[in-house]
Image 1 (cartoon, rainbow, N blue to C red):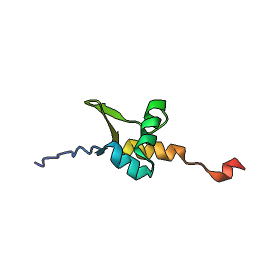
Image 2: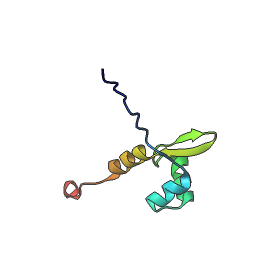
Image 3: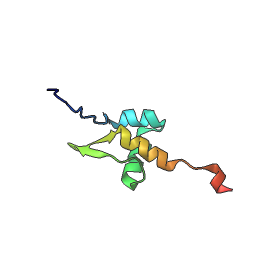
Length: 71
């Protein structure tokens, strides 16, 4: 009998400093985006913003433009 164990894959959580570096913006820009609701989705854990890497990458892909469709 085989024992199948499913691995639970969870996207890593990044802090504001890591996300700002990843996006090449300042932490204050990231803070402004959070306040305005225009930045990547985030979680509040103990009052501290944390970002899931996969959610941030989805947010970035939604911002991409197909230049051919703009003509």
